[in-house]
Amino acid sequence: MDQTKQELRFAFGKNWSSFLQTLDDERIREAERDLVAHLGTDGLKGKTFLDIGSGSGLHSLAARRLGARVVSFDYDKDSVACTAHLRDTYFPGDADWRVEQGSALDRDYMAGLGRFDIVYSWGVLHHTGDMWTGLENAAARVAPGGTLFLAIYNDQGGGSSRWKRIKRFYNQAPAPVRLLMCLGYAGYWETRLALIRAVRLQNPLPFKAWRDKKKQRGMSYWHDVVDWMGGYPFEVARPEEIFDFHRKKGFVLRHLATCGGGIGCNEFVFSLETAQKENGKSA
Ligand SMILES: C[S@@+](CC[C@H](N)C(=O)[O-])C[C@H]1O[C@@H](n2cnc3c(N)ncnc32)[C@H](O)[C@@H]1O
Image (tube, rainbow, N blue to C red):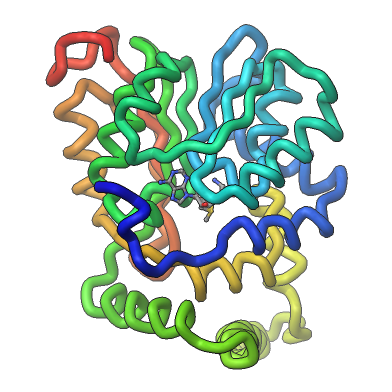
């Protein structure tokens, strides 16, 4: 699919550029910890790492700090600028971290990148407008024996269809309405969680979710709220669909973390057996 034909898109990169104002060492360490925990390795020295849809660039930075040679790309030019800014700040003049604008739907561009020990695409391919093509292209970039780390929105059936309509509305609404929607959503969850804590005789004080968010991949609660409300195009998949799709290509599931059937992403870490069975050849 030609992505330029997708009429409505959330300005991901603008949100990431605001997120970078909050970046500190703790967030960077959390991003590193998350990669190490999921990839089951102490460091990434000598590994090649492809970050598809790098967003802020935080996880590319984490991979580079862990020793990987990194290629990062994103479709949104503001996301590309964020990632390039992190590279220029933390690794100025570094030949082992390339940052580019490109699309996960552009098969020829992707094929030209080669194959990687680790292909990372967290929360991206469901926002391309053609998720299964994006998944196909991402899988084809994994070197034999390599790792594919994905996060894809969970399919909630009717709930997901309703969210798709809300997100469409959000992206067409004026800025004050968008702000109210984000405040309403964050306020609803904050109140609900505070009440649950009170019933459980725990400290009900608000903003626990805000504080805890930093420990989840180094993210920020408010920027995640904006990303969730706005994130469009929006597609979803059931965990078993993602599993079956990759199993047929010779991938073995090493780690699965579901969002418990609700709103949010399911995370998958796959290993590619020595050859991609379905294609039977390198791209
Ligand atoms: C929710 S953000 C995730 C960013 C980052 N991976 C992370 O985990 O923080 C989704 C990113 O996917 C990017 N994106 C959307 N469509 C894309 C495409 N076709 N190719 C590459 N990146 C794309 C967006 O521009 C955005 O930066």
